[in-house]
Image 1 (tube, helix red, strand yellow):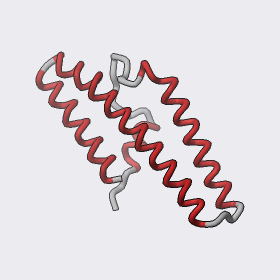
Image 2 (image 1 turned 45 degrees about the vertical axis):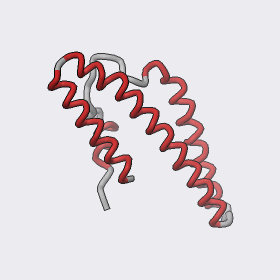
Image 3 (image 1 turned 30 degrees about the horizontal axis):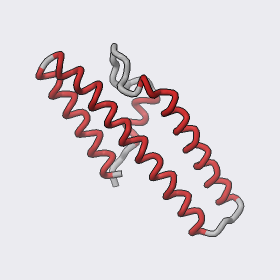
Image 4 (image 1 turned 90 degrees about the vertical axis):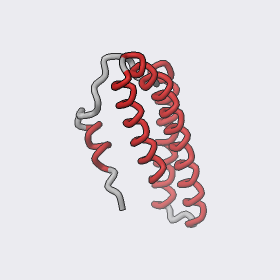
Length: 114
């Protein structure tokens, strides 16, 4: 099993990549936050279902819905990153563009494995 805690820990601790420019999702930030709050509510609902001894298949159905919702957010973030951050880096220099493409490919790889 792959350890996926390092990237989340890095973000939580402020060790994430620093950027001077706005992030690719900046123009849709409110929509992303709304989607994540909805997903958060779904996850809390799943916890409540478990606490209330709801039928396993019903819980699994909700887990599947949350998983699909997170995948949708991930795909949108990848698209925003490619269209904004990678394109901007490529405009700066070939080396910066190549580094951003590698970073994006690594992130996509983690998403595919999860």
